Amino acid sequence: MSTIADNIAEVEARIRAAALAVQRDVTSIHLLAVSKTKPAAALREAYAAGVRDFGENYLQEARAKQLELADLPLSWHFIGPIQSNKTRDIAEHFAWVHSVDRLKIAQRLSEQRPAELPPLNICIQVNVSGEASKSGCTPADLPALANAISALPRLKLRGLMAIPEPTEDRAEQDAAFATVRQLQESLNLGLDTLSMGMSHDLESAIAQGATWVRIGTALFGARDYGQA
Ligand SMILES: *Cc1c(COP(=O)(O)O)cnc(C)c1O
Image 1 (cartoon, rainbow, N blue to C red):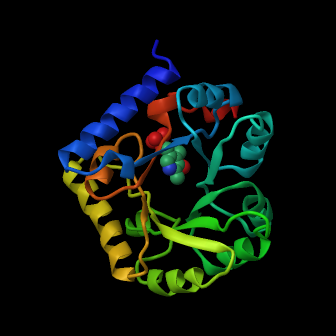
Image 2: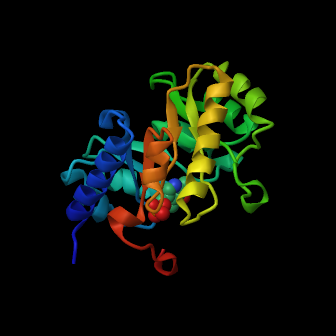
């Protein structure tokens, strides 16, 4: 059976190969370990193998792990759907939020970000799969949302995040991720981040400019929601 350290080495090799294939500098691509449903011990193992950034989707679960792992210098990223009543905890306990898709949530995060912490790094989640996805702002709504968020004082708008409809077809993957990159460029806000690519499509995402790949299954194995 492969260990988490083996899996990390394998994913890092995939990232290097994907970067090399399109002549990108591999240091511009960051690994976000998506640890939802996984126990704190698994994150500790990933930390021992060099991972520092962890992505979580569920606030309560994330807070419990943050307390268990408070002895480690980890960087926490919130990547799940956000309800208004969760923004204070997110503003206080995360370095990044990848899943902002409406202004009201961004305004609350800005108001609630503690003054002693650096600005909260924000990605706007954009829906490039039409009706196939419920989350994310529409491409049409993106420019106004991005401009409004970039003016909020305690946030730093970094870029876009997307979860295209899953497909094994490389050309379809490329087309979806290219759309995200083009949307980012057309905003003209000097954004430096594209959060895109998961276990099954990180090669395509890197080819299209991803700077964070969000990897769960390939690092920690399949998720068992039944026991969560
Ligand atoms: C679960 C999840 C991932 C990781 O997906 P895998 O296919 O397990 O790599 C990435 N991003 C988001 C937003 C997720 O919810």
